[in-house]
Image (spheres, rainbow, N blue to C red):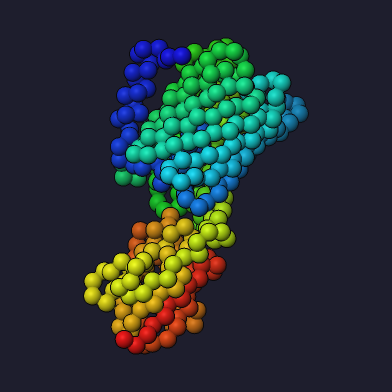
Length: 349
């Protein structure tokens, strides 16, 4: 099965032009994508992702009955930039005989490109999507090409192409929109579109999208075909950081020892990542300066349990340092995420 020549060339060129600046593996927030595109997101290591999409429609007068169509996503990143998961949607219109729709998928993303392949149970279809993305300052652009081997349970292969954008207004808000079209639209099939106000929940890993769209479910087939009604709704993302409960609980680093990168004489560097302090126990000598770098997508603090020192909010990508002049044991935590705890042991040389 092949796309028509000119269309294949245009889709390939668009994806190639977009790829190359942003690694789509890092894009996990709704602030980085519009309602009907994945943006090539492939997850965060050690995190189980649960997304809840709920869309509502209003029927004709006089009843104006409210209908709803929820889609639940559950996904996990395997080693490497490979995400596996599934979507489950109810009140689906993909196949008349299957109002409950399942879509299992795997998505691989690297160097600005992502490829997804999966199976849609309701349509009995093997579906695929190629995504390209690129960022220009606060603006992120993306394009997609899709193949539906048995589109809408019709025994016919269908193709779709689309594009979208997300504009960051600041750390907490973004505006996003997208448009996707089946390349051989049939009577009653509309251009699929969506627009949303994307919101980051302060001091949490959650994001929220308040959106309007004319699509029904959030599977590849659901977001490739527009319906004849505008629907309002929301999407809420809930990451579960499994490393908080399973696996390695962090390392112990001594000054000049393995696990602690040195940043100049007497300085020890450590990081905050995956809702964890990089080293649960740091052993250093008096006079050592420790520098914490926040490599998480949300704000953290480094706060002594006894209140003797406090970093204040450390923005993503920023660092904070503290010099330990006296020997002792100093427990500390993150104020907005108190389950994040660690210890500095300071010894006389």
